[in-house]
Length: 272
Ligand SMILES: [Zn+2]
Image 1: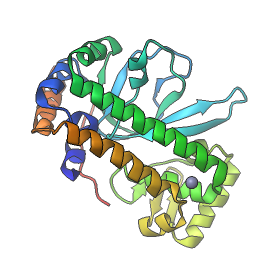
Image 2 (image 1 turned 60 degrees about the vertical axis):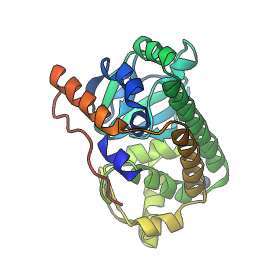
Image 3 (image 1 turned 30 degrees about the vertical axis):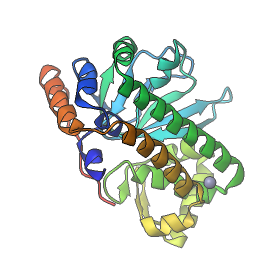
């Protein structure tokens, strides 16, 4: 299981090779640059992304200009798959908050593969169920838990999707994740520093102490993780990967040869 997270997108790695091949020929390896908007709320979904690394935040933009994150996605998921439910405009804005790389495909090409692959349909259903679970937990967490506990939870979520103990997140990103203003972020960061969950913080990075951060987070983090793991594991048991990792990586390499990109680096090992 851990091996899969090292070689690419977990959702794709769980597909049988023949099903994956339906997608690989259409994939384009792209950079996810920090702060890049992949789709804006209200716009048609024109591209689907499967992150190999980095972190994308799903954001609700309010008419007042306030924003709040409703979910984050890394190499365990995808951006834009809601379009498979039918042509629609994006209900949220998706913004890259930690730079990385992704495999990109058009909705039409993805839909064509979907019609030929029951394994891919299963994977998309899993992804949408996991995303809905995250939306539900975040809604409950926002209503019930303190800003400090919520910040600890978001930092753990970011840590699950990046390497090392130093998280490349800005105060603005934290403000957006929490839906609070910068002075509140400064206050809760200092509280987590005092309790040891945050070891140090700079303008655009935060060094964490994971065990202490886990102690400071609300129960939502563990609950959400267990629930999503259960959804994903149930689906994986239905369609064993049969060496899909190697096939995915070969496909990505092929895409990389055909489509030069700046500094694409593939996937890095995770350390916790
Ligand atoms: Zn919570």
